[in-house]
Each structure stands twice: as C-alpha cells, then as structure tokens.
Length: 300
Image: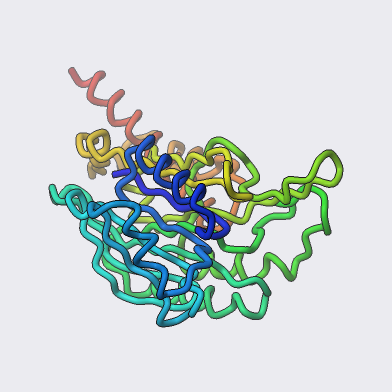
C-alpha cells in the first residue's frame, strides 16, 4: 500500500495532470490526496476522467466550493469509506482487498490564518477520541510546528505553533519519520530570496506507530508545484511477519529488571511529550527483550 499526499497548486494546467499521472505510475501509488486542485465542481469529473477508470474519488465541495481536497484510490486494490468531510479535512476508513491493511485516513489542507485553522485542530482532537483502529493523517497543514521549520522570511513566532502543538498533544499523535527534502515548500526564490518551510507532514497515532514501526515518509522533489509530494510505503508484507513484544512475568523478579527499565526510561529524547513517552517505552522494550534473550541463553 503506497499512499501519497501532494499540494499541486492547481490542476488547471494540463501539464500538471500529466505530472500527477507520472507520479502515480512511477511509484505504483494506490491512494492519493490531491491538495489545492483549484477546480470548480463542474470541471472535476472531466479532470478525473483523465486519470482513468481505475480511480474513484471523494472531494469536499460540499464544505468548500473550491474543492480543496480530492482523495483518489485504485478501487481494484483498496476501499475507501467516507466518514466525514470539512472544509479542511476528508476522513474515512481505508483498507486493502486482502484484508491485511485497515486504518483510518485523514487528508488535511489547513486554511491560511491562525484563526481559521483552529477548527482543524479541534476536528483532529475530536476524531482522536472516537477512533478504534490505527490512524494516519497526511497533508498540507499550512502551519509550521517548530522554530527551525522556516528558513528566511519572518522568524517563527510562538503564536504560529502554539495551537498545532496543543493539538498534537491532545490528539496523542506523533510525526512519522521522514527522509528527503527537509522543507516541503518554497517560494522558489534564489539565494537569500528563497523562503522555505516545513508545512506538509504525516502523523500517526500510537496504534499506527506500534504496527508500522519502520515506515518512513519520503519527501520527493516538488517538480511542477512549490510543494513536495509526500510518499508513504506502508510495506505490509514486511510488517506482517514481525513478532509482537511479550512481557514474561518472571522478568519483574529478575535482579536487573528495575535497572533495565530505569535505563530505558532515562534515554534522552527531544520532541513532544507524547513522542518522548513513545520513544522511552520503545527503549524499555528493547532492554527487556535483550534481558529475556540473555536469561533464556543462560538457562539453556
């Protein structure tokens, strides 16, 4: 299952449609969230027909006349069941035909002001409270999260990041690992005139992170847009064979148990509070797995 999110800055140019089709084919994408299509609802079907009959689509024209978000999926590979639309999100259940992959998926396109984005943060927190399966969130949030997320331009202010940070904490989500371009958007200026920022992101809840532990978001070159496409290979086959962690009661009475747990929990981690807890728990798990392996080896 390969999922893509891309702010294409409009599909009004035929060359952009061609470029999106190339991305879909080159990377064997099954699901794509196309952000900022700039197409009126009456023209949407004509554009979608150019992608072929293999693709089905959901759009949020009922909440935004500009159709700010389109989700497309290859219906012979996956199913997408719409649950909710707003002017800044499309949310639904995403699963593959083999029954190996079943998650909640939210495509995001944040509005352009701090005030107008606040309903988005509330929406994500409310969704987090009712989810019963792994949750993936991808898109253009139109907001930086850390002070280092912008190069040149105006310095990042606390007011810009505060609501985003609080949303992440309240929703219990963490950013997925990434590779490629650090900054997902630029004004394509030259030298000191080039402003770059990281406003396109992918997040997962704890259930997502525990299943797709090694998944990495690839930030591709922006190409026709001023935004980078985000590419996520969920690599189902790899994760299907992994062994779940098991805690054996005898370890609690082992003479090194408390030391191993303390060492894992003291691992220095930088990031949000939820991210720190998650990484510390992973460190504790690693130490306990090593203790279990060593104990069995000594017992044989």
